[in-house]
Image 1 (cartoon, rainbow, N blue to C red):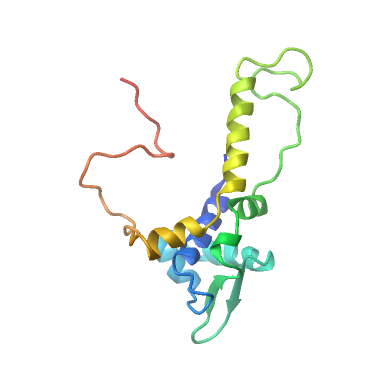
Image 2: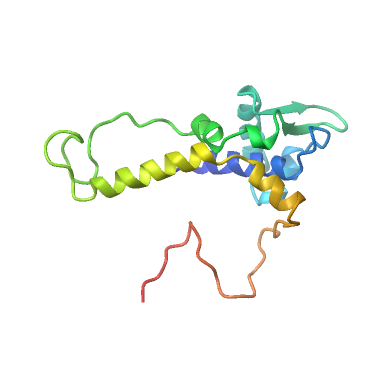
Length: 164
């Protein structure tokens, strides 16, 4: 549903949301990369794009770094997503062949439309306040990259679920 740039941008903005205090606290690309287990040069590139879009503000020098340009409650997931995901205006059906909207729909058309509608609603209704709240109010702490879980693995949006 989204690529590596979008994932990294969401990771960077969510980390900035976690420390949001009106813009006083600033994080460097290194800080964000280390906290999220990402490559620093890639995070720096993403932060430049986010800054150009007005979602983050950056400053150089001692005490410099990045902060959110607006409160996390005012930044929707959709804003970040749209910066890095190209809209696919093609009407070619990759699953059933032919042209979507002409003739009979492919066998999974209705399910895909439902998933896309739910995803669009999620992007529109979700803002970055949930990350600030989780850390600052509920006391959640990010688990360092490379940590091995002690309990059985929980469901993940990345890992395929095994069917028994």
